[in-house]
Amino acid sequence: MHDNGGKREREDADGAPEKRARGETLSAGQRRAIEIAAAGKSLALLGPAGTGKSLTVRHIRDALVAKHAAGRVAVTASTGAAAFLVGGRTLHSFAGTGAGEEPQFGIMYSKATRREDAVKRWADTDVLIVDEISMVNAAFWDLLSRIAQRNRGNRRPFGGMQVIVVGDFYQLAPVRGAHAFAAECWDRLFGASTVVLTEVFRQRDPVFVAALHALRTNALSDEQRALLAACDSDDGAAVRLFVRNKDADAHNAARLAALAGPPSVYVARDVVDDSVKVEFPVEPRIELRVGARVMLRANVHVDAGLVNGACGVVVQLGARDALVEFDCGQRARVEPYAFKIDVAEPGGRTRTAQRTQVPLILAWAISVHKAQGTTLAAVRAELAGAWADGQVYVALSRAATREGLCVRGLDRAAIKASAEVRRFYEAAAAWETE
Image (tube, rainbow, N blue to C red; front, side):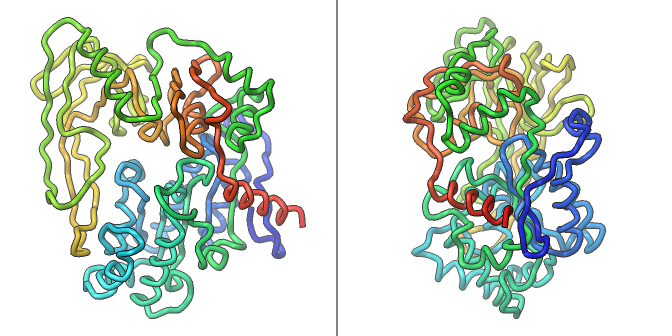
């Protein structure tokens, strides 16, 4: 959707879908989003999983850095893991608020508007990019706008700065509170500059794409539900997605214990204040054995396919590294990697937390939450106990093909989509046809 005589519109899918799937060209919606951002307007870039939001925002970031300089474009995300993946910092750390819930907003506002470093950061930033906007609640979004107004001496939303948000409200929601689109400042920021990408690149099978879209909105027909429930491809290499971390951890521990041979333990070197909770993509202690199924959690060699989400099997263990045979055909020695995330301390100051660790996790199983943002060649979705809005959709949409998907426990009662999110997108569709 974008401003066109006061109307909003979806991307107009053009030709060459195969080239776009390979990243050789951009869809009409992606191009329009880049044009809006390059023109200096705030932008809400939304859309289902696999529609190229990450690629689009990289183009936007590059264009805005060229225009303003890198130091004036802040790249953030709602969680630490997401912040690492976009090469940025957490939204809380940028804001200078420290962590807290709505009862502490008064204290958080004071921290962010009194600390010299936070005030300067807001004043010196021309563009704020926020990834995974679906996990930010409305009350905190309005708090950030008030902080920006104060620190920038400007009463416009977010103090007049350009704001780019990215995500999909049908995916994982805020832990508490309303979605960000319910914030008082939302429509003033994005009412005439929202783009909803619709063309899916991750999956190319139109029947599968249609079923996933219906799953996303909780509008599955009986035929589509049967199609997804019948997905039963599991050659033993599929990543199992569990709805709870503890179930994924237990499955990985059992599979690791069943392997012969001595384990190697890799202990991270952390540089972080103990009073600050930091969410790194890898654990502080990793135990591996030859034969262990693992997933890469960093972009080590993009051109070779060694990217976040790449899976493989450990074939040799070293004192500080591991040799992995990846499913993409590459054999690579995975060495310690420095994960750096800027975080907000309780007092409001910002500090860089660092964990140096072998960038691997056990990958017989992971949680749906940890899988968000990844594309997996083979997935076994264990959906028993799913409870959250969008959880089933996030799990199944990680798979690139029906042939690479195995579904267990697809209970219709567990397929949930927020009524508020549905109304938000329905209103957008109505505006598009005015």
